[in-house]
Length: 477
Image (cartoon, rainbow, N blue to C red):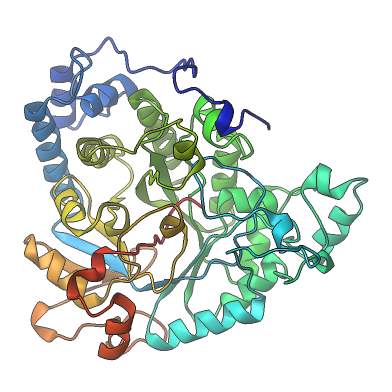
């Protein structure tokens, strides 16, 4: 798919079909939500806008929505606030997709062996990935999250390499150049999965977009791709690359990516292969409230169909240093009101997804804690390393200790709980048993992930610096 560049876009020229207009009233939508009636798209729009009968957010109505969502959260999952001990190991930043919301990627030709010039990107060999994961597993993590760029030399298997080489013009036809063209060979997806499968650590990797890349130029199904990856050690798939699941928005912000149907097909394939999946929404750029609710409806429908979605992860757009912002297509991201209402409406609308995540990476500590009273019950992970949101201009911490989590969660009267990736194993943490560390990883024994000296080096001498230099475990690639 091709579309306009950021420089060619005028925010007044989108001509979207999906606009926030309904035949419903806010009061009726709120009553339906209060009674536990499954909400329609129009209901969701009314709640998300606090009524389409007036411009702007009505603060009294907003609080009604937030209070109802918080009550629903308590009824559904109780007072626990869950989090996971995880490390991010992104394999490569090389990517030619050209998403206009992203500053994580580096144009792939810069990685070629004969390229004359420096760049800030990286590609890891399977051996290097294994070293990163082994060190993190030794510290006690239970999850490895890996989301990467679409490197032209990245293929599923050696057989896939041969198929891609057989195209008349591989670079143009299937975005492929052989590994020998590059300074660093990323190996195959299967080799990277095997490398990151250290002991019994849970490997959470290969987004729908990456799965498309891992089957490009073939007639393989998504199920076949994910089955191959599962045999190599993949345990679950992140539902990132969703952005907004409405093609008229995708045509603006990520015209080179798979479309809505492709994303949903990939998720079905992952679940059919026996994998759990997550779901996301990256919002706060060019989309309308109607787009957001249509997206929620598609997630809910997919969960009705598959039953494989473990959580919903709202990703508030970080606009700094992204093409959409640099070319004047957007002048900022979502407001605080929009962030709070998105989480609340997700809780009320997604009646078949138990876990709604909030993000100290996207929101910072104070705001993230507020959203725990808006319907959210999960608080991400420790994130021992990360690049995506930081490169987009984010400014919050790149590491979160268990002591941080316990202090934050108990400060709002909730119960801190360590969880596995799939939420099937949990451990309640007692605040008085400090220092706190993970126990669910294959080599975890309750020891903090970082020692005092390492912690000081990671966040600086200022104890409040946990709110700077951010990364994101699930940020959209």
